[in-house]
Length: 288
Image (cartoon, rainbow, N blue to C red; front, side, top):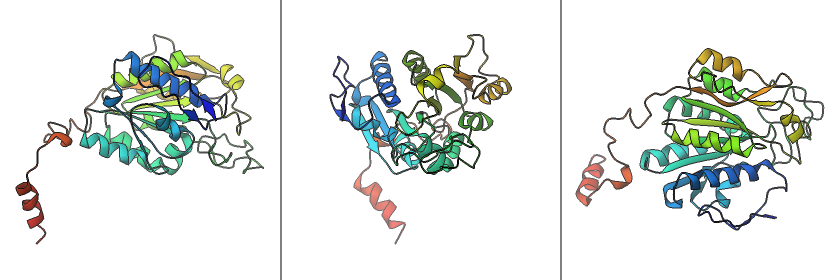
């Protein structure tokens, strides 16, 4: 068990974790903690939601409201929580398998709904919790503990998929560059709508290809002049991955109405709406 040291930050918990020493999850956790503190938020204002996997353990290690859901089903839970109380700042943390594999259908429809949430995907291109099977983002031909002769399906490009669906905010970062990651989280928190951050991270135990060294030799930051509102240019950048380089930054941004804004009768969080016994009785009478 690896222990997280306490610092003067209300979100930090002095709690042992089950992550391997050197795991990129530590950097992601620290970046979230520091960003929330920098924004002046309190633990009572934040809800952390996850599915299943190593990434999904993160809400256990942060002092805020937390909810651990089912494998691949975190987005529907987040949508329900946001619909009930859209005053909460909601962050969903999940892995590449959890999000793009088991949760791929919810990922697509989550983009369509444009809920005002931040979705941080820990993309290590492997299933870490179940000991090293290939995930939806594992490269074609890459050997794993299960796919000993190499992956046969082509890998999913999640940021290209998101841009093709006109996702309102698409960014990519790297766990080995926490300052860049924090800047992406801050930008996502400031955005109104569904904000996807695909965070590339090594799995030091089960992915022997996509190591820290491998990423550091390939990732680069987008030029400040890059126009993230140009969908065609964004898609071109999203297709860059591998030896030719991997761009980091806000790839695409499109300001549009959120799901809550499109529903005229939701003027305040549902949790604050008053209900009397008579109101409930009238509803029940409809089923008589």
